[in-house]
Image (cartoon, rainbow, N blue to C red; front, side, top):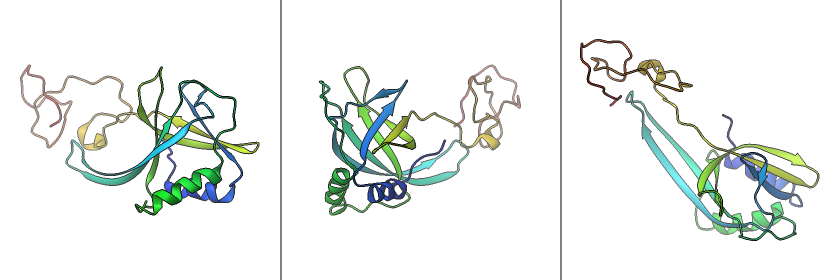
Length: 178
């Protein structure tokens, strides 16, 4: 999945200060235009997959609050968003390669973090498409589980460093990767 970086987002904010920022999630549902940007969170993630491979990345999470009642108003301009960002940047440094995530929930939907799959230019606005992430095995080549697996084979005890679908020990005991 393509994701938007902080640098890409900021570039668009700087180029089109008069544009309005809209968000779309789910099945063409939009966040009310009278939303409020409540918080920026910087998350430095260090991970180790089931194959023992480590990874590190940074995410910048922009929290958006949707009021309970939609008002017929224009959404925030990029200029307004930029003024909020300047306050944030006075307090913390956001790496340009940080992955932009949007945290959002409302009365019908539990709060969660979305990836930004695209920014779609519209007349005097940009629509940010929010997309759920998916879980995948990052060590699929050593694990034997395809990245797009929907169901898993019964995993047996193995002498390998990770999961194996090969039966190397004759047992009926189910085991996981680690």
